[in-house]
Every structure is written in structure tokens, then in C-alpha cells.
Length: 203
Image 1 (tube, rainbow, N blue to C red):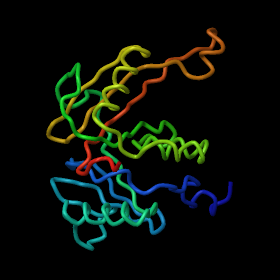
Image 2: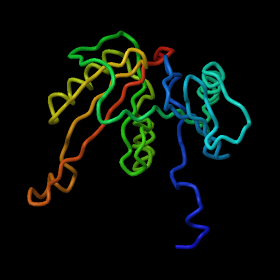
Image 3: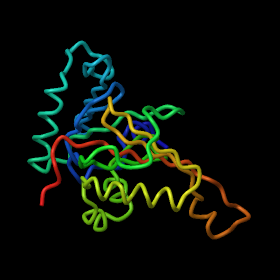
């Protein structure tokens, strides 16, 4: 592999704008512009450039306004990526939906080890199918997804972090090969995160 190939950005280009403005931000969240390579990471309540080039910081209000403009303009060049939780999920255990708010769905992309919107991950495999996946789901749809995960998968842990406005769901499933061949089956740990949205689903 050449040096040029090593320095090239990821082949995964965004198709969709951010799914929604988060209701709340938390430290570790990322705000990215993949085309320019600009990245800000929320640290101690401010958004710092990464790496810190001395260009200054952004506020939650500035990031929120940029996300709103990207959503309104259907601009896929701006990304919001929620912070990955640690081994211990933050918040309190829940059995039912703790809120009536809509939420944007994010899942762990095992290849890049970061949370990405569900429809963006689907688009890397089937862009046409991804258009059928809403960026934001209602509280009722969120409850149905939670119920489905709890019923279908093993070792399910569900927690609600009210301070971050997020519902975390960690569970185990067999990889695709494992379903076909029990002799080589392996469990994969999955993470599904519902980021509560500042705005509601459009009719």
C-alpha cells in the first residue's frame, strides 16, 4: 500500500445530513466536517478543535446552529457523533421508555469503533435501503425497538442517562457466520444509542 493510500480519508462518504439536533450534548461528543477534516470534541463543556490548533473554541449554541443549518439544507458534510460510553454504561437501568421525546438512532460501527447514525451505516451496504430508514423515530417506535432487542438478543443492558439525554442499549448477538455454522459461531457485543432530539419528527 502506498503512502498516498495510507493518508487518504476513509472511503465512507456521508450520504445523509445529521439526523437531528441533540436535546443535550455531553463531553466526548464529536462535531466533524469530513471534507475539510475539521473536528471538534466537546471537553469540559466547550468544543475544542482536535488537534487543538489554537483557533479557539465553539459553544453548544454554535454547534447546534451548524447542525440545524445542515439538517435544513440536507447537507451531508457535517456530522454529529455521540461519545462512546465506557464499559459501564452511564445512567440508571430502565425497563420502559423514560420520556416521550423523539430520538435519533445511533449504532456502534465496529469497523471504525464509533457511534454512527443507523441509516448511515446501512448506506455503506445499501444506499437505496437507507433512504427508508428515518433519521429520527418517535418515542413509541423507540419503545418497540427496545422491546425487540430485549426479546431477541442476549445479555441486554438498557440504561437512561438523563444528563446526556441518551438511552444506551448494549447486547450480544451471534455474527452472521455464526448463524450459519455453529462450529465457528462467535458473540458480538453491540451498542445501540438513542439520542433524544431537540425537535420532533416531521409528519
